[in-house]
Amino acid sequence: MPSRNVAVVIEPHAPARPGVRPDGGPPRHGPARLPVRPDTGRFLVLACVFVCAACGLVYELELVAFASSLMGDSVTQASVVLSVMVFAMGIGSLAAKRLRRFAAAGFGALEATLALVGGCSAMTLYAVFAWTGDWGGLWADGPRVLLVAFSLAIGLLIGAEVPLLMELIQRIRRQDAGGAVADLFAADYVGALVGGLAFPFLLLPFLGQLTSSLLTGAVNVLAGAALVLGLFRRDLTCRARCVLLVANITVLGVLACAAVLVDDFERAARQAVYGDDVRVAVRTGVQEIVLTGGTEGRPLGIYLDGRLRFAGRDERRYHEALVRPAMSGPHARVLILGGGDGLAAREALGHPGVRRVDVVAVDPGLVRLARTDPALSRLNAHAYGDPRVRVSAGEPFRWLRGAPAAAYDVIVADLPDPGITASTKLYSQEFYGLARRALAPGGRLVVHAGQVATRPRVFWTVEATMRAAGLHTAPYRVAGRDFGRTTDPDRSADASRAPRDWGFVLATAETRPPLCLDRREPAPRTLTQAELTADARAVEGTRVDGLSASTLLHPRY
Image 1 (cartoon, rainbow, N blue to C red):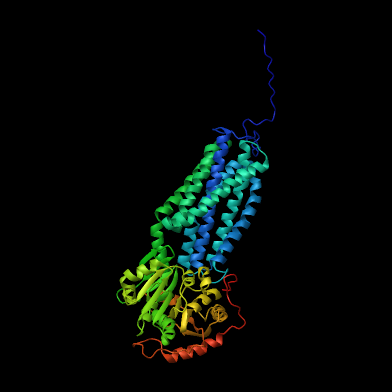
Image 2: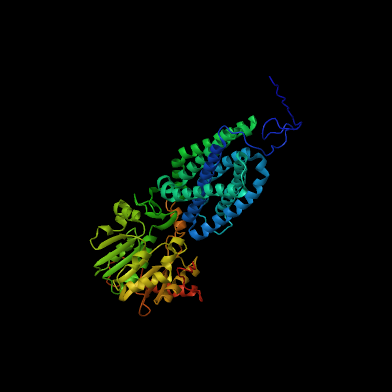
């Protein structure tokens, strides 16, 4: 039978196996040896791209949500976090070019590091916030610098993913660059969509910020380990496989331990923030509400998203100063925007002649707590049990758009400070125009406009915005009594956070309203006419001239 001549050509420097050089140098580019078919391998790489993109966006949103809830001004916080992360992603992509020859091992190490940093970011930031005090300041203090540092680190790691994943997908089957980029970015963008929707609708409401970030880190490390140690394990040396396996198990163990201890951590951090007197801590769909004191003679304090709402004697002083000057004229029909704690309603109901009080509460959870908590309901004199009070849950701006014209004698805007971006439109010219329309002839609008001593520009911007809406204004302020004025250790934390003063603006649509108190009010009261007159004169000394009105399209707070 005919014989076959078979020629065998051996290259003297050919690698013994793909991707490994016999001289011990860095691996060369070459086709990957996969345990599955190339089409299946490409699908698994794209699936990993999908998962990693979802995890990356969750990390970004975690940082934005955390910074916004504790620092306020969500536009600024989102801008800082996202811009720093996008910048870092570009730097990370450039840096990852040097790792393309070690694409599989580099990607495995990258995902383990990203899972650890991203998964622990929220817990670390909250620990710094809890044990070092309020964020305060601008960029000089540690917590804000740490926020930027996390944004930078996570951005670098996310940006380095793309070049390595591109190298891995090309090693499975070479294709034109445009097609590979299209496939990779399609999986990346769809994953980002899923992560972006999962965070506000699933992770945050059901797991909270800390547990959701830890779970995201666990998913991240499992996806990276499965791809590298499963699909590309033959491209790794035995030592590299062992190192990556130990690293991934360690990261997963750290995240699992943190998840087990997260409840204890939250309790300890909450005590560090609010003291040992925390009695109620609930998270609604809008904010975290913490009640301190309220038993055994201790004054009740309310914190909303870590910010002191009121505490001690200052509560009654604040609400009297907010409501009483507006009630010195006609006040049969009262509208309270905000004020879910029922304390502004208590002040309004204390005046004779009030027939109806409508409360538009931003957070229904706070209203439920004001109805059911014994200390808070006692403090608001069970205002929500009064048949004259009607509560509507909703956003005040939208509610005012549907309110009938000339429906109210008094409108009380008991809203969060304008520095919190979610509240900025509630201090806009358009908002005050809607409130002006809802005022009856001779009616009065009163607005809480923040602290004058620490933020005079914000206060006078509110006043200028109300004048731009056609209102005649009478600004005034009332000094707090508890600021730095206690030696009681049970109240020192609350007192140190109590505001120095509160600024208010009273307005009507006709003429400048006089600042006076209704003499028919039942006694005793903490605010006197002499104090009100003196504080109104004092606030004029802080006036900032030349300020423009804040509008929906041009917020100025």
